[in-house]
Length: 419
Image 1: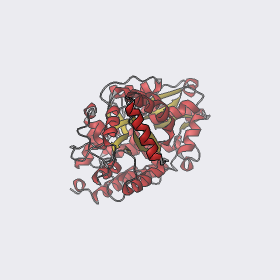
Image 2: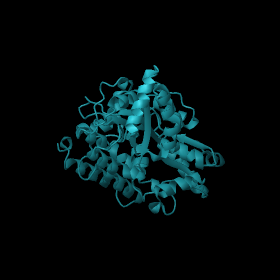
Image 3: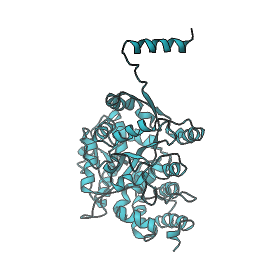
Image 4: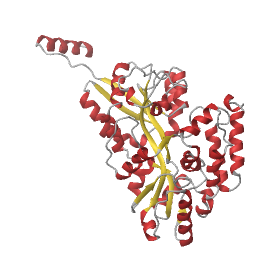
């Protein structure tokens, strides 16, 4: 007897006894680059969803971050990609949507739980179509070693003058690296330097949107000034900082050898597990006393629907659940430092995460200035800023030269800057 005939006979017998055959659960696969949180998805997030939807089974299938984009593109073209696609912010995901590889989600129940700014990273340039559910953002700022601050009788700085006064005192003491950062990898110089302090000078969204419409130029004082500040950083970053990698900086700080580390909320869980001293944080110092506080509250990760999915209905059920406070609270507390983008307030349990999130009430939010539209030319404005920021800190490029180079890059291809 064949296996199929045997199953058919069993099925018929169950029906004859008045029993139904259990329906097979729909299987969903999530493609992601976040391989570091695999256990959290498997043990904390997916079980909560499956308990509410026992007819849907979800598998989280990550790649290493550097492999994700290439692997995903191959699978999408071959028709073998998963049902749900983890979305990087802005242009990479926009290209997938424009290529028909992400589905529009304007009609998804719950999508209106996010503000226009929260959805900006996964919405078309005309603002009409959202194609990924926003999951989390990261907030830039500064970590500091509370033990060192207590020993040297220091307070978290609120202005840039106070910031440099603290660095001077740590440098004079001579035992610790005042400012832990390196320029070898370049991207960290740009994101943890220029994009960290920059919004305070270009007034957040006012400056970012001004670059988009061409009413402001990168050679304007508000964009040059952050480079001038960064040009002073090198004298506080310790011997050999130009060869120091991102990983080197993390190690130097968590070993207790540095006082201040410019970075962001994404370090929270890592530093909690590695540092044996009390961690403190402070927002980017204001240019001067009385100035409005600004933070870089950068959308980091979303989730979209593969239009080729054979399980689109079940996938939309999962995406709708992502718009709920229940998911947001689980995600934010299992991954402290990655903050929900929903309009509803979410209770956070980690004290540092709570402090980062509190800045949203006191400061105006923006995101990395080159991520939306401005990096579509050649060279990419974002990638170019990596090199130039590192060069400014290293003292081989002046702030004015860096700003002029970035502006000339835009003039070469972006119409609003050709005026």
